[in-house]
Length: 78
Image (cartoon, rainbow, N blue to C red; front, side):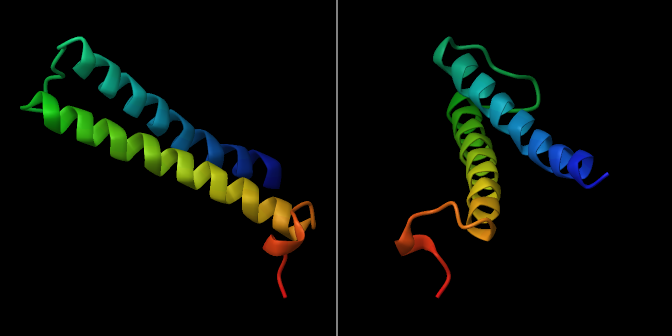
């Protein structure tokens, strides 16, 4: 059960990061999504979603590896 919850915790930010990439790609081709009024706002929203999702997944993996001592010496707890 713990693994399913952990997977769900990682999948949701992963989907948000994927949607952020889609928003940025659509802005590049000039496709405006309906609830967003400006292309530049769409790009910024996509960038925030992408970076937020990426940071969450990276932090989750880093925290897990830190607990298992699979990191370099400079990242280990003192």
